[in-house]
Image 1: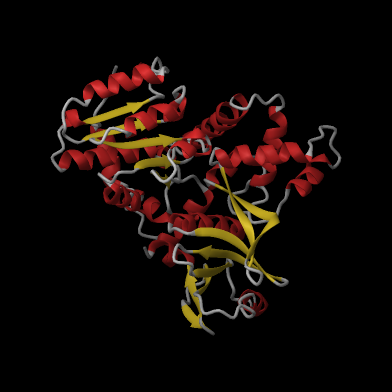
Image 2: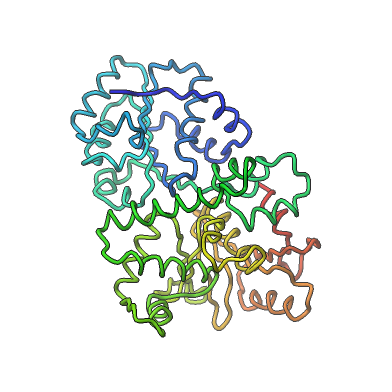
Length: 417
């Protein structure tokens, strides 16, 4: 069995320049805790690089290289490792003393019966176990049942704007940089490629899209009509920030089309797309009734650059909805459950439910310099009688407090933490 310890000087430089600080901090807090660390997220969002950065931290702390075992099951030299019992025996052969060992299994869902492998390794008291996966199947499978209460899931996305800005430290104009961020890709490797040749980025994004749609979804679920799946994805990419349901998606796609798609098929496709982390859902929450609604949620794309492989996207189009997409993922990164809100006949862009049962409310608008737009956005908060924080995020520069509502420039807000 091949196993490797991180080290690559070029990659090390990138990690140092763009440190995934919040994720590394969390891994450090969880180090040596008797719990499995499960890192999930779309392909190429930086899961392997995060593990490598964390392994470098372990080496800097004085952990011996032989006490770190790292296996990436997408690497060619590890493709033969499919039998979980043989793999388990070979890993345990390396755990030869009572010292602490750190075992990293990258894309572990590629191993047959990976649930049994993980559960068996976890029984070893001197092993600190970290695993990654590019599909939510990892935690919707038998693993979740086997390991109830014994794992913590860390969901990784492409770069936040703060991380993106650190990659372009030479650019001092944050407004110009944000325009680039909102219209291009924030996948780590796409950022690197854009510095070499911007023409390479769309080809790279197309490869990610094709891998997710073909390998992670179509092949895994034996879909016969991939064209219909592409149609649904294209529709959802164009519907960011809009309320959708399987019923209205089917109605729109079947209108004036000979290629019919059923309501039930769309329900399955939505599940597959969110499981692959290419799309994230925001359920609708009734603020007055304090309950989730089963219809008309919203979907957000994990990387806005993916819209650029669609002919319908334009560089400066739908800026308000793109802002909403960016704010959604930043709220997800900052913790809590993120919903789209309803209060009587008013809509609140986002309601965030924190772990301590407290809430935050957010409205997003490109600008509220127009009095009518300003009054519409502010009035959405008027009937909410609790004292939880309320935020109006815009591209305007005049940060202020208005009737207890914090009006904040989006760029300032994104860079604040």
